[in-house]
Image (cartoon, rainbow, N blue to C red):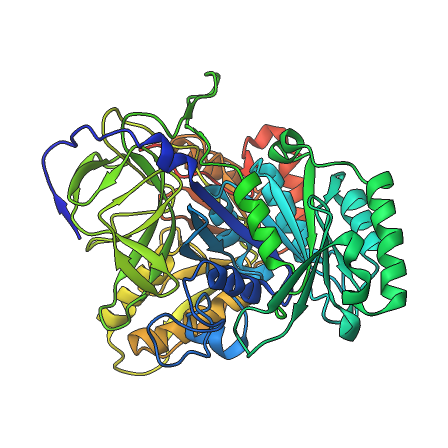
Amino acid sequence: ALAAGAAAAPAAAAPAEEIARRRNLAIISHPDAGKTTLTEKLLLYGDAIQQAGMVKARANGRDSTSDFLKMEKERGISISSTCLTFEYNAARVNLMDTPGHADFSEDTYRTLSAADNAVMLVDGGKGLEGQTKKLFGVARRSRLPVFTFVNKLDRPALSPWEVLDEIASEFGLETAVRTFPIGDGERFKGVYAVETDEVWLYERTERGAKAALTKIPYADSAAAIGDDELVAQLAEDREMIQELTPPLDEAALASGAMTSVYFGSAMSDAGVEPFLDEFIQLGSRPAPRPLRVAAGDDPKKLAPDHGDFAGFVFKMQANLDPKHRDCMAYVRIVSGTFEKGMKVTHARTGRSLTLSTATMLFGSDRDGVQEAFPGDVIGLNNPAGGLFQIGDALHTGSKIAFEPIPSFSPEVFGYLRPTEVGASRKSFNKGVDQLLAEGAIQRLSERGNPSPDPLLAAVGELQFEVVVDRMEGEYGVKCAVERVSYTIARWVQPELPMDDAWAAVDAAKKAGALAGAFYAEDVFGRPVLLFRNAFTVERLENDAELGLGLKPWALPPLG
């Protein structure tokens, strides 16, 4: 897919109409809020699948399109991010499905770095949950517009007003109500659409298909609702929406000061279509991306209508095709036009590449692409030797570097070791290289004591389980993680040259300040200290004379 080539040639600017019709979004939620179900219903409306739960062009149609790893299917949770592309009402939508599990927050963070919009999915029966709150903070730091979909109204639910109050108080957001539920649980009939003053009533059809929809002006809806109590409640709710909630302010939505709120049931297909219609209308188009600049320099951004092609790697995924042991790099296009066969420069190494094959991604399926534009996500096979890393920029024209994507501080550590005598070291090493390139787990090594078995550092325990499962299932090597008893990692002066950072470590060690610490280095050779308790870390952070400059994460070094 990639080949060395001559210097990168100038690329064409993207047509304005193609930029204008792009929308992309990342869905954030607590586990089991219904994210995969909502994802599939959006795909259903985009005619990307014919039936919810159906993998395109596959016989095993009951597996989720977006949950394609073996463990995801077995456990019913999303533990990797996928990008799914579909067309809807003349718009090209790139939907980035994200892990809901807390141990995979870092993957979600990277996906949000490539998104222009976030959809916060809330379980209507539970309200805001821990992981939703955490991921909303990530979306806020990424300065993304946030759309809120309150799900599972076909089950007993909290009062919609309670959910709205919780969103407003927890996040300090204005809440613009766009659709509102009519009943909940077995009495859930549909939604009231604020903008059009219509009632949307739903009846279930065959499993996996779109629900049968009836739209009625509010003034004529009482008989169709057929429940006097719900009719009276809707009249009261409609009046309260008009008098007590703010109207939609598109500028406030775009800046993150307001969220537009929709209620419904993805499982019952109720309320999904009005949400999708408004997202196409209101969602942010491809936005300028911050560039990495030297300390003290003015901030700079690269606009989507810039004449040269540019994009960045935000995710790696091994074994989308297990038969070929491949590793896919997901590239978000920021500016210019991608054309099959174009020559680009890999910014970190200066290497020239010919992009002879690229794919658009539909879960674990992929289709070849001839051209793509800002806002699109394309897949490139990572060449032998693992050239691509998360955060890498590809470009034509002048060299650029995008604002880097930081890593989360790991909290669990252990050596990955083969458990069978005679296990293939070649398969083991290939599996380690490809799976760790995905970035969900970091590779460390003990200073001065290199081991053929990598020291893994992860945010949570489930990440170790996934690596062990995939090493056996995808590479045929049974492994186990031998835990080490450390719980905190800190980088030492990561912004300094490596030798200077290690000199600070050696000076602190000589002064007797690092008793009990584990001396590790990351893949760039920079010092990482592991500790058993927060007290030691706090003591070192408060000792300015040591000059350790401890950081819970580190940005990749400039190329």
